[in-house]
Length: 253
Image 1 (tube, rainbow, N blue to C red):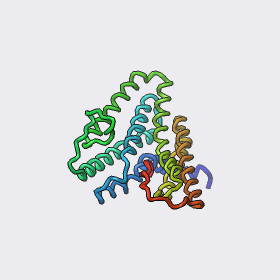
Image 2: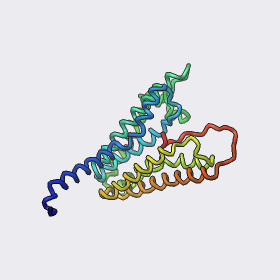
Image 3: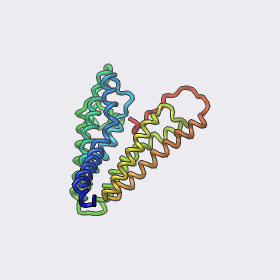
Image 4: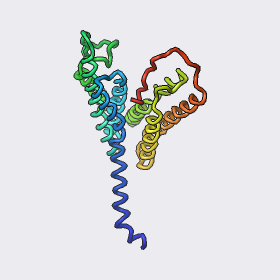
């Protein structure tokens, strides 16, 4: 059978693979948060999840959407940001409700207080929403004024993806500080590595802006460095020390 005879099979197959890759890009990033969301709802305890994860991802994806107005990129990447923003808002809403329900006689903390000591530790989901809207409004206004500047647009895109790429750094630092990966899920890190590798390959193959590819490679390198720490510390475990509650990784959650 010649090549022309196979076109009826190869063309729809290629289209199907493209749709599958796009779907994985749009929804793959939120999959790790589904079991976390269900666990918080089941236990009614949000202490193990850092809401700063939500802060970083909200900022990164809002900036990425603004970058799209200055330089259009693949539609799946745009939808990925929208889906991630919705997911992080849902996580914030649940965490806030659970935390407030477990606090006894706690003083109400509001975004409008503008108290830096309580930043991102407010008592109502509405306050988080106000902060996100304020950030979006200011960033959107600055982008509107500077949209004709190629330097500004490229910097905006770089900041967006660099912020997201740094999510693994707190785990890397924590492992180095304690010379241990105790409490860290190796399976989760392997999922990061495979996901970030797929994402970076998608960027490169689909001609995404250079910022996406560079920061994707950075994410993969951070993931590999964490895996290298796990291997090294398992071969040379540190001497027993008094029990310390280690801070939970931002990205792991």
